[in-house]
Length: 402
Ligand code: NAD
Ligand code: MG
Image 1 (cartoon, rainbow, N blue to C red):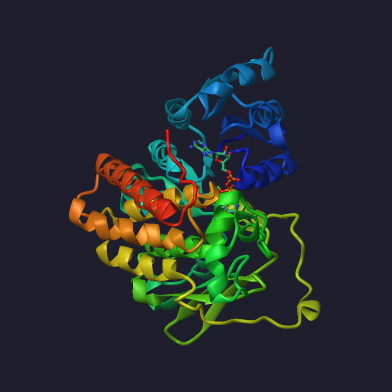
Image 2 (cartoon, rainbow, N blue to C red):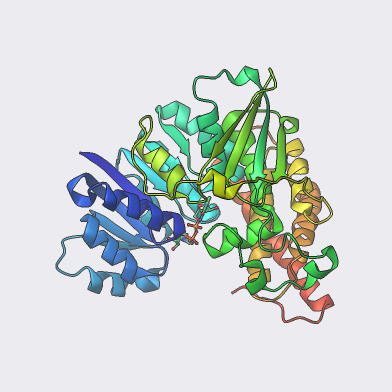
């Protein structure tokens, strides 16, 4: 019986993973080792009972008593906090889903790789923050990383049986997010609710806002480089409003392989779950005659500064990815709290990167987890300062961290 763990089980990707696991037989077909969640301990406990998990861990220690109550008499172990999540990743499992949101997913992912497991990686932030470290860890332990991000799953599938040397370019598709048809001048005043109205994909709150700002696509450009080792100038981004082509690989003979399907993450989660086989996945089938047309347009760089910033990050490499991701997470926190405007997110990230170039050697070659965490920490502090300064300048109520 295959053993599995799901990190971030209560999120959008976690729920879709749970759905596929239960449809594939649940506790009768899989031995579930660990399930982790954030604050929603009621749902976490419910999932743990259904899959008869060994251990359920919530990120927030304040949730532990409620988690313990909800699992009383089940024989399922409970724990809480970031260290407990990392320890849960030390429990061997054949297949591990990494679906925590943000840099918090890095350490559990790294620890899971140490057991030579298959890591289904939704948490793109860990590759952006520490791609070389993660890849080295996988190679050292003979573990495999399978992409879950829809674009990277599409590219991975487009490369089956191909030589990476024959690839001329990779074309990442982007929906353009909720605000793609807004006039540029109006973007500065976009609210959280407006940015959350994604046209095609139902996702967690943070990635939905990142789609509207294209920070998500910026992370994915870096993610592409880390997964496939391709040069940044071979990675293109195109807006494809229908979100039916999940990405494309262009070869030296001019051929383009495109991956199509309904915008449902169960495609790529299921591919990673069943790899190297393909099994039935309950996603909607495309009716091409009804779809009739697919459209494409080049992204406007004035509208999406994140797409420019990710190029700077790839030029610098080293610790720049960690700083970029951390600054982006903080800027997003401040936008969600109403402290800064929509376009200020890119401003905060840009200010932080410029400042950090003088604060730390972003280009250092040897990158340890400690260095990455140091850069992450410093970038968070600086980004917080820049965000508060912007709030004050605009007469908004700044978000002050505890
Ligand atoms: P989500 O916010 O819906 O869920 C995140 C999960 O992580 C939840 O279980 C939450 O409780 C947990 N969590 C949050 N903060 C935590 C912390 N500090 N420590 C431990 N656990 C924590 O997010 P999501 O949309 O499911 O995205 C998960 C990851 O997958 C992200 O990295 C995202 O970029 C990536 N991803 C998501 C989608 C999508 O369609 N949702 C698509 C591609 C990639
Ligand atoms: Mg994606």
